[in-house]
Length: 208
Image 1 (cartoon, rainbow, N blue to C red):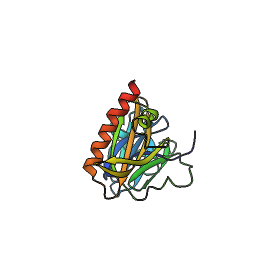
Image 2 (tube, rainbow, N blue to C red):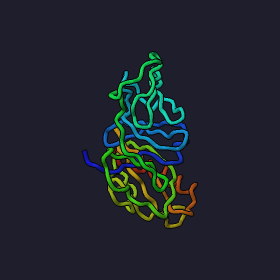
Image 3 (cartoon, rainbow, N blue to C red):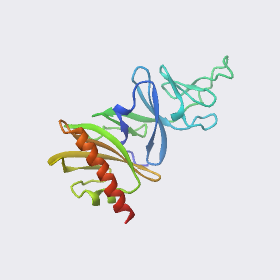
Image 4 (tube, helix red, strand yellow):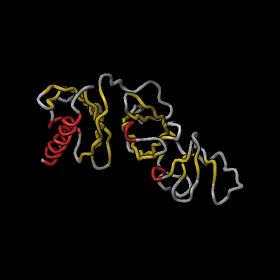
């Protein structure tokens, strides 16, 4: 596996005490924010029966599986098994954890041993995330002003004005998710409309 940071969501889309699904190079993740605001990114499978932990419930600083209620602490270890309340769960019952940080309004994940920081995105503000049924090549064909692979950047025309945009690429089984940012002070409504139009143009290029 290549050790690199990948955007898996925008901070604005993950409030406190909520879990959501994420991805890293083909790995399904449960990304969740505790009641105090702490972020975690784990393998999206409960060690008990394999239920997706991204469907679970955040309770304080723990995440509980929706299936049988097994509770996992911030270190990924199982803390409580409702069917055996007197049992201290073995330390071997543990969810594999990924590194997870917030920077510039973006949630980034990488393997636990990754060092360094994600790419800096100063001067940009988070816009929204969209899914596309095409590849990065189709996105670049639809908007030649954008360049890059996993981080697409460039000056595009939005509402008759040149605006810097950045699209952080998250690869999925059936296409892409783009986590979009635009220049601070840009018209967010116009930028969102541009993003929707880009999706239509890119998917047409991908289907051609």
